[in-house]
Structure formats: structure tokens, C-alpha cells
Image (cartoon, rainbow, N blue to C red):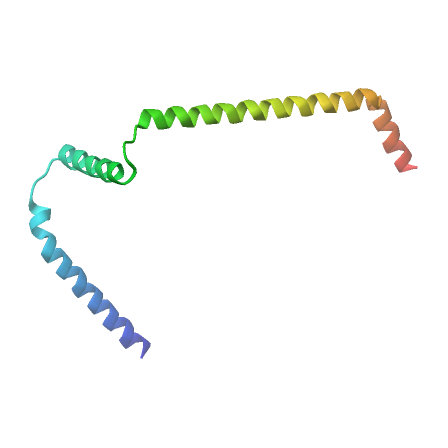
Length: 110
């Protein structure tokens, strides 16, 4: 029963594929240069985008994105710098030398 259903699906799929190819053969045989195809595709996307969202400038978008990234990295650097200073101050206040950490482990071993 399962094999019969699988064979039916296979035949119907193959017939669908053949029908689609028969409809598209005239378009497939028409020679069209790649430059015209890519330029037409890009212009269609740009036109649809502009219709939907208004004027879009790639340079403005990139500039804003890079500025936001720069601000983010500066904030991150300031935060890490303050954390490093805080760690150094805590280490200096606690007298954090390596000898103390060695003594700590020696105490634990005893």
C-alpha cells in the first residue's frame, strides 16, 4: 500500500515537473545577457523597496550603522577599562600577592 502511494506521488510529481518545463521552454530558449538580467533584477528590488519604504540611500544606512557600531565599541571599551581598574584597586587593597594565593592552597592541603 505504501509503495503504491509512493509510486503515485512520484508519477504526479514528474508530470508536474514536465508541465512546468513545457510552459517555460520559450523563456528558457530566449537568449538574454547576464548584465541585463542582473541589472533588471536589482532595479526591480530597488523600485519595490523604494515604493514600500520611500527613498533609501545605502551610504546613509552604512554611515549610521558604522556610527552605532563605533559607539557600541567605545562603550564596551570604557566598561572593560573601568572593570580592570576596579579589579586592580581590589587587588591592591587586599594586598593580593601571589604569595598569599600560594599560602591559601598550602592551607587547604593541610
